[in-house]
Length: 239
Image (cartoon, rainbow, N blue to C red; front, side):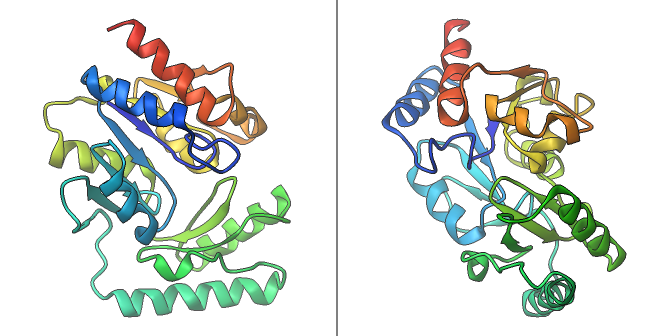
């Protein structure tokens, strides 16, 4: 299996390409499963899991899993009351916004269930660290990508979600049989060799290497979606 991030990893200049679709088809024909593990919202991911030639997709950095053969999600983070949960997230965002008035709620936030996002554009690394620290003080987790900052339940991350999905839906696969792929800090848990033996960063991960505790074991020559296609070709050559 390849468990891969989406934005900046599968996309090329924010779009899917025909080369990516062909890579998906080639991997499927060779018996290599592709699972998307993204920070994007439940609303976006539900459709992607249905239409792409993949086995499913994890949304909201480990919050929910959408199998390709079902429109009903598996909650990877228990949410007893979604309405109350969303209200609590809104309060945290409002408190952060009082201290950082320039932060802007992401346009896809209305399609989210487990987390709350705002745009990363215009924020410095120091400001992001302060936002993360203040979120933690309020009892919430925090991560960010090349697109968004995420306020999320403590302990919710891509690696935890992926382990859950592997155990529940793909018990025949071990973590050693999974190649994890990403491009930004919210993919860091996928780079931890304690959990997954072989991780890959597409070339644009270089922008974040100095800030990552866990780094990918391999970095492609090409960036973004072209880097993923480079990895796909390399894997297919070994089969």
